[in-house]
Image (cartoon, rainbow, N blue to C red; front, side, top):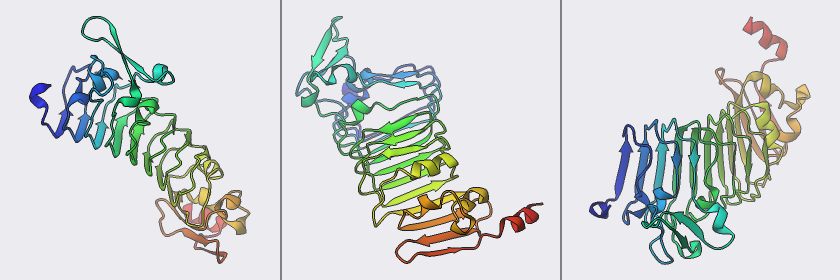
Length: 296
């Protein structure tokens, strides 16, 4: 790694038969790292951060200048271990392997770990079931998180994230403890049904594409402010469930939001808009019986 100490940008792409990542966290100048198109890596562990040698207090931590981290098309990746969970409550972590067959205790409170990371992107990691929350909590500048086709079941405990984009995460069921969240974009995550514990007071933009009934259930639990804007896109059948004139079951959820715009997919000229302050509700959806005739 010594010869790479001045490296700023690095892409690890199409490296076949690579089963373990090297200690890239020890590169002191690295600002952007993209790892993609690997079928053989199943576990990413603490060696990726610390190299298996351990970093004693004040010893440099991991990824001291990294700003952007991306993983793409990691189809075999199942687990992202950070090595911190078991020892965090005792104020240290244990890094297996100190070069002499032993273990090295590390004071995590003295370690700058991902201190400048602002953006994390995961794209095409369908077997990855969870994020390393203990690790990411150290990334105090992480404001943007984007996941597409990732197998995570819940996301939470990231108190600095302001922008969250989720697409095609079909196993995702809940979001929790994201108190700084300002913008949430969800696309085709049909199982997402629980956002009651977001703990957020600043969420101003919410977008749901390919809206599902579960998603509408999730919206019931969102803390709404006077600035919150909701944009939804879904089937005409689901959008009808939001219409007050049709006694739509989702109207009580819709009317909680100050500003709402909805449209149908495929047939984009069907839409409705709602403004709470004036009670204005406009829509151009055809009557159900007319729509059924047109479809036939």
